[in-house]
Amino acid sequence: MGNNILAGKKGIIFGALNDKSIAWKVAEKVSAEGAKLVLTNTPLSMRLGTIDQLASQTDSLSIPADATSVSDLTSLIEKSMEHFGGKFDFVLHSVGMSPNIRKGRKYEDTNYDYFLKTIDISALSFHKTLQVLYSMDALNEWGSVVALTYIAGDRAVFGYNDMADAKAMLQSIARNFGLLYGRKRHVRINTVSQSPTMTTAGSGIKGMNDMFTYVDNESPLGNASAEDCAGLVTALFSDYTRKVTMQNIYNDGGFSSMIPIPWSSKTTE
Ligand SMILES: NC(=O)c1ccc[n+]([C@@H]2O[C@H](COP(=O)([O-])OP(=O)(O)OC[C@H]3O[C@@H](n4cnc5c(N)ncnc54)[C@H](O)[C@@H]3O)[C@@H](O)[C@H]2O)c1
Image (cartoon, rainbow, N blue to C red; front, top):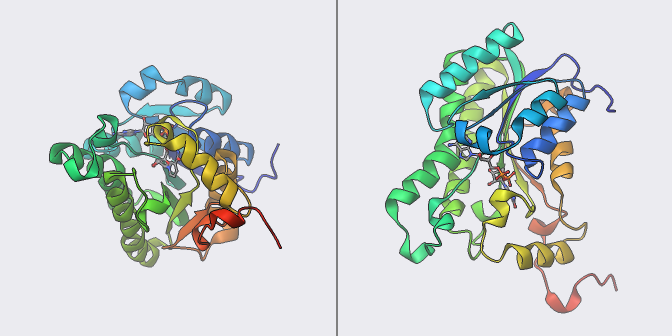
């Protein structure tokens, strides 16, 4: 049970594939805080994943949409407005995929058709979503939009490949659209930079297990879990963060603010 900090709010959650997904944990948390939801993912992910279980658990409607397709996004937002009986309040973009990573291509041997797909799925889809929301005037005043990112969008992280470039673009889109949407409707747009998390997408990154353990050991507070991320996103959807916009907010136990020194791990003296 929550504290009802999202009572009366309605929104769309992209990217819940299975119960490991960060979006899954966000959906559970915002629903427990009183929000009404539409869940969306690609038609294929909806067939292969377990989103129906989440939909019944949170009493939500699920609508398939490929986030790279403007016509799918338009229909998703039309149907969501129909379902909610008008405008809504928040959107979570929890979408990412790199064919270069999936197919084991190194950064210095990038396939450019794959690279364009990475950018389209992991960054442009966010611009497309925002543009459709903006043109349909679908969000209420003081609405809130969050996209998930990773520190490789700011610093070079070995093995993160072309997803690093996509994340840098995603963060830039949040700032630039945040300026426009803030002025037009007081809608805030932020990115949350999450610790390594053991999900389907996360596990595809080279060396993920070692990275997860290393960062967990080095971060003063340890890695932030998917549940921790859900807590922060819930706060960002709530009225307690009305003046937070165009920010990249680290949810990483402090890792991004330190230089790890292996011989001093975990010591306080
Ligand atoms: N797991 C991590 O370590 C980590 C760390 C920081 C940020 N993130 C980010 O969190 C977000 C969610 O990833 P996750 O770790 O929960 O993994 P996940 O695999 O559970 O979620 C990724 C989702 O993207 C969806 N997706 C892929 N292509 C799509 C498309 N064309 N249209 C709509 N949806 C599409 C997938 O179906 C899936 O549901 C991603 O943006 C990811 O980059 C993850």
